[in-house]
Amino acid sequence: MAYSQPSSLLNWLSQLLIATILSVIIGCIFWDVPSSDSQLLLNDRFGYHYTIMCLASWPLLIWLSMARCHGHDRAAVESDIKDGLYSRAVYIIVMLCCSIPASLIIWLGLVIPAYAMSGLYIQGPDTEAFYIYVVYTILYLICMQTLFITFGFLTPSRAWATLVSGLASAIVSLSSGIAVHIRDLMYPLHPFLTQLSPARWIIKAVASREYSAPVLSSYSANMLCRNKQVQHQDIIVQLPCPPPNGTAALSYVGFLPEPGENYWTVPLIFWGVCLCACVFVFILLGSFCKQKSKAKK
Image (cartoon, rainbow, N blue to C red; front, side, top):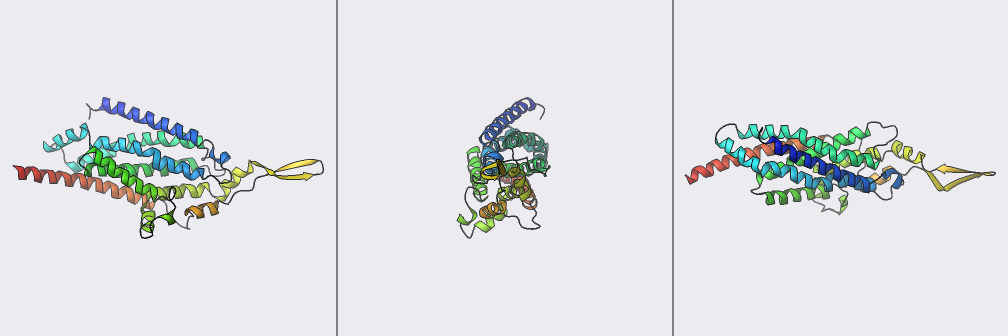
């Protein structure tokens, strides 16, 4: 680990720089969404969250995950395990725990600039919206990173790992309900996929706060409608815009929250399952390789 730190530090800085630049580009595209989409006609809020969680994060997820599974580190680890220096379970658990802080900073570089430039954190009386959004999004990205690492250990090469991870990411993205409506998916599959898609649960949790009546009313109070004018004798009074119907927008997409719904359960369970699968796959592959080498001897 000591010998690998200089190269690891350079890779980490390059990943952080690329994540920040990508975030700034997305922030320029979705600049000040509340003022440009005040009446919820363009679905820019859903588009922003879908871009961050499902599109912009995909190349970074591949880069972060495949470096551990198919690179120089994997060959060195296999040699150490063969020499009996440590076990596979110890390595995979320590590797995942040590990679979380470094990955956390990279994901913060991807999430925070774009969200600050979009203006969606200004939600009137809700002062905790920024922190809640960051925690939800980081949880989702850590879940997907653990899933990609599992596929990396399960597949024999980097190309196969990228292909399988891309298919899994496409399934999660399509079942989120943004790019393709839930009712347009195959009927036997869409109830199952929508309940297990972490992207859908995270976007639903964030959107239910952004489309709430107090938040939309605070946006509309600062905007004036040209077609809302009242004349009092010689004075023309400009009236504020009426708040849009956020409940109808959520109901149309299928994100209308249910009472007592817990948004943390599915992502946490998903991350736990991916973590256990990652450990199990790495140990199983090690035992399979041992049996294969003994058979050759």
